[in-house]
Structures are given as C-alpha cells and as structure tokens.
Image: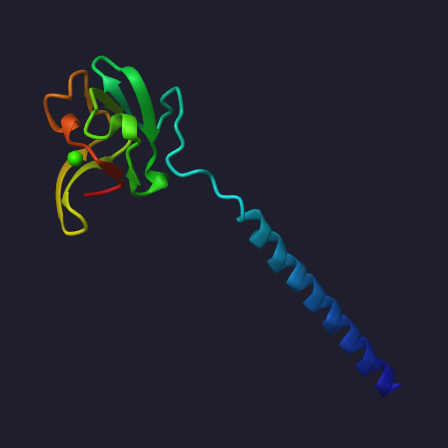
Length: 131
Ligand SMILES: [Ca+2]
C-alpha cells in the first residue's frame, strides 16, 4: 500500500516536471524570431520618428521607434536629413569620436522640421531613445 502511494507520487512529480519543461520551452522558441531593428516603413505610425532625405517630407524616408533602441540611420539619410516628424521622444546623435564624443539634439513627441538639412539634419548619424 505504501509502496504504491510512493510510486504514484513519483509519477505525479515526473508529470509535473514534464509540464514545467514544456512550459519553459514554448516561450523560448516564441522569442527566437525578433523583429528587424530599424525596419524601414513607408508611412509614419504613431510612436515613430520619421526622417526624410528631402525637405517637406520628400525623398528617401525611414522611421525609427523607441523600441528599436540605438540605431544608425540608413546610408541615404546619413548626414542627409532634409526634414523630420516626431511622434515619440528620442535623440538625434552626431558622432564626433566614437564612443565618447558626440553632439546630440533632444527630440520631443510632436516636434517637426520641414527644413532640417541646414541644421542638425546635415550631421545626423544615429537615433536613440535618450541622449
Ligand atoms: Ca555626422
């Protein structure tokens, strides 16, 4: 009688362990496909900061989201931002000497510039969540 109870307990414990392992394995595989960092999108979505190579929101465009973290701007926009529109807070970065000397501009949700190439837009190297 006692032996049967003990065996039943072991079986129950093994079953619980199996379920625990299965539960752990599922989230691990779900996180394996992470979204592309700094993925370019044609249209601005709420929560993005979008940059254009031309003035008045024309030319090559690229949108950044705070969730992307620090991202170097694409080659078409490197030192070449003609205009931007921000629907998120962030920071524009111009590297003077990586990694310790940089020039920054704080960007606030709602900021925009129709003409930015004659200002910091001509220097932008990267965008980050904060300066
Ligand atoms: Ca630069």
